Image 1 (cartoon, rainbow, N blue to C red):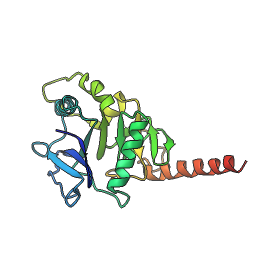
Image 2: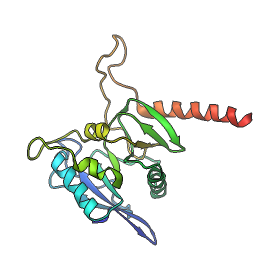
Image 3: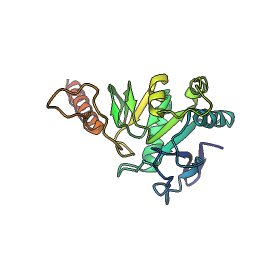
Image 4: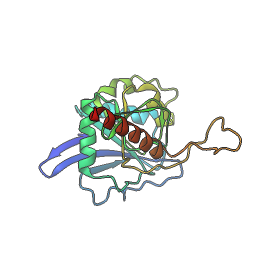
Length: 216
């Protein structure tokens, strides 16, 4: 199947839907009324397995698809989402030779703004809405599977094996959970801060110094 098809009335993206947690029921109402998406639910409300990820990747590669979109059942679009915004983000990410484009994250370690609406990330957690590009297919297919149907934390795998990881900001998907700190300082919050606040601060810093450079 084609992951993205151009139509006169706008883009058409195929989305492989999987469960955000073992308890989730598969729902697609976030995509209802959005003709730019064609949903392909996985079989049953379960986490995406490594075998399934590789199968989806192989199908996309054999079909000659430029990208593969995955979304879990915890995904909810934010007010920032439009088909035009996503299409522009995908185009900019492809021009930057991205392996992956994230619609949101729950946590990130380091981030650097590389474009108006794109941040490069080091490590991340969260896979509510992700776009995998052709250039990462071989890396995914070369992952070794321990067991026949190993369930994985897909964000951890993608964060560790992919190099050029880009994040769309403002997010098109909501933050779905708070990530606990491993070694929280006594008296401080046991959770990491909202990544949207971190990115807003980084963007303000860049805009400030860019304005100084422009003035001189």
